[in-house]
Structure formats: structure tokens, C-alpha cells
Amino acid sequence: QVQLVESGGGLVQSGGSLRLSCAASGRTFDRIAMGWFRQAPGKERAFVAGISRSGNSVRYADSVKDRFTISRDNAKSTMYLQMDSLNPEDTAVYYCAADLTYSLFGPYTSPEYWGQGTQVTVSS
Image (cartoon, rainbow, N blue to C red; front, side, top):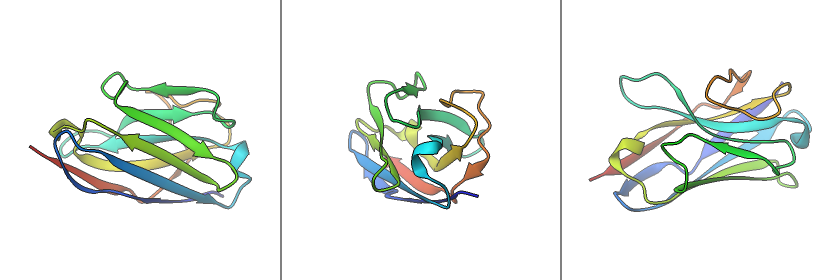
């Protein structure tokens, strides 16, 4: 079992920045691939970014590439998502996800473990 807790969401103006955190417990952190997904109102949950167990490999959705940065600190069992140049289309509930079998998440990944989500709202 893996328990995930997100934090860092909130309200920000267009062009602003936020950093999300995801604290994990229950398994050796460096054995789990992790990533971020988001669900906007009226839309399905979608892949945002993924990071490998070591942190050496990352992948981003095209919509966030060059604006968002995913990272992890295995010593702190925590993953991060630095979000810059936010726009109203980034408004969504952001979910942290983890899995023991995938090496790197992508758009068609179905991770086993999920956090409760954190709301990000970008005003225009």
C-alpha cells in the first residue's frame, strides 16, 4: 500500500506560479514511479507529468511542457510539481499518483495509488 497526500493548491492569477507537493508513505519511495494528473470541470482526468523512480527520467503532457517541472526528493519521500506561467486552462483538481510496476507514467497510464487531490484555480 502507498498513501499519498497532496498540498500546495490554491488560487493564483494568470501568469503566476504554484508548487504542489505530494508526500508518500507506506512503501520505499525510490521503488515507486510517480506522477501528476488533473481533472478540470466537466472533463476526464488527464496526465500532466511523470517521473521515474530515480528521478532521472521525466515526461510531460504537451499542454504543460516548458511551463511545469516535476521533481522528487527520495530522501524526503516527496514529489513536487512547479507550475509557472499558469493560465485559466490549468484550473483543475490535481492528483498525485504512484505505482510499483510502471517505470514512467504517460497519457495512457493507470496508476494504482492516488491522493485525494488538491484544487488549483487560475483567475484571468
